[in-house]
Length: 100
Image (cartoon, rainbow, N blue to C red; front, side, top):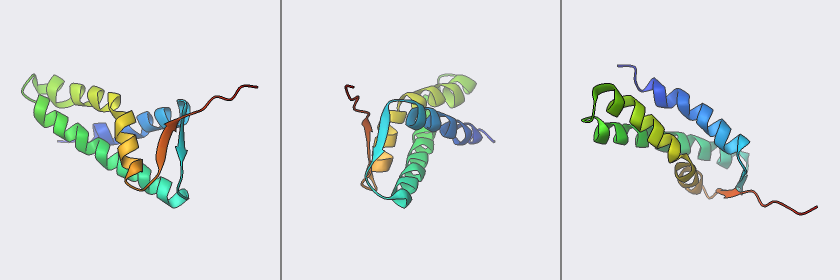
């Protein structure tokens, strides 16, 4: 009934860790395009979670409906974020480490 709250709440935590804490840069576009890219990534993440839930739902009631789609969606977050930001012409790339 309220299982859709799982990807909604989990996305913001996972996106903050991936985009803010990992070695990636969001390049290009202005602030509005980057925010819209984040929202597009959110929509793609929830859609991927739902599709995975439908595909894996026959495995076990809770495991296939909730747990596995959440884990697989989290693992796909780098690909989903590149697609979501890419829809608006913004790139997500690994940070280039500079020698000092």
